[in-house]
Length: 333
Image (cartoon, rainbow, N blue to C red; front, side, top):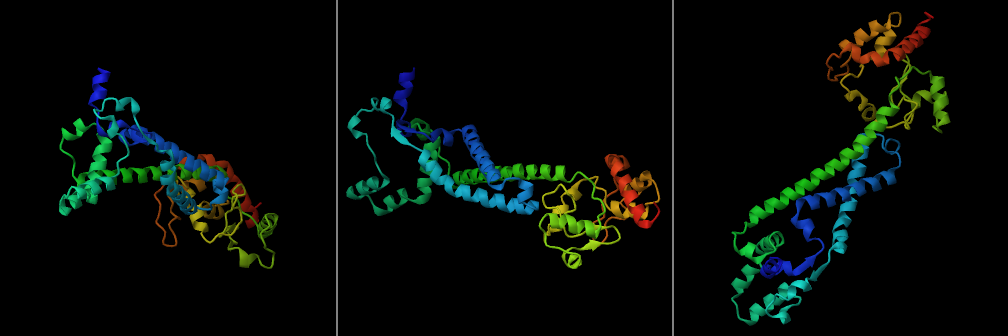
């Protein structure tokens, strides 16, 4: 049975193409692309070291990985070309009636032959029409057997072009997955670093910590460098988390950096304000007030929905410390 099958194979099946399975079988193409994309991400991570340290915001990360991926895709065509080899299947050549007819035949050779045979120019032009060649190539790659091709109605150029567009869209979706993979890792690093609650800090403490990080600031220049909230004792234009690699480093897009943690559904909006104003009350009282989100949504920001008070239970110990700090400032302790 195998010999009969081989004898029936025609056209494209007389060639061995290292990349043909990639074209014909979607699952193999997907596996190959996923491996390629994974390597792209790994290379990106190596060049970036710690993602959180290198990229201050998600937008910075997205722009960098898009540039990196685009650069790699520019070399993908060359990479594929190097991997593709096309050779005659000599074990199948014996089935040809005239072995001498084997050889390389270029499209230009057919055109020259047609002209010698005085085929009408309009017929030649129609045969070499770009859209017609597109159809022949697509059909030939998908149906290597001439019996398959001749026994069916070929798809139109528009139908095949739609398929190519869908393949392109699929590739873009996979690129989005690459960005998501890197983004998830950045978020994980960010979340781990920003677990602690921000504590009040005096100008002197800010200056000491900043100078330890080689940030140029003195008592004289402090208010020119940092936006400082004297009431809540918070820096308003730099990250306030000691474990974050961007701690006290000035960034013009600081709000984008802190906006990530505000995406949480149980983020305690106005926690420091409530802790300051209710410093003479209990942790439970602060939690209940913060959960209502009554003081959030100021400065034309969207007012968040109330949250479940129990979702703030993990912060209770730190809120207790926060209350003690604000009590000291009010002279109650």
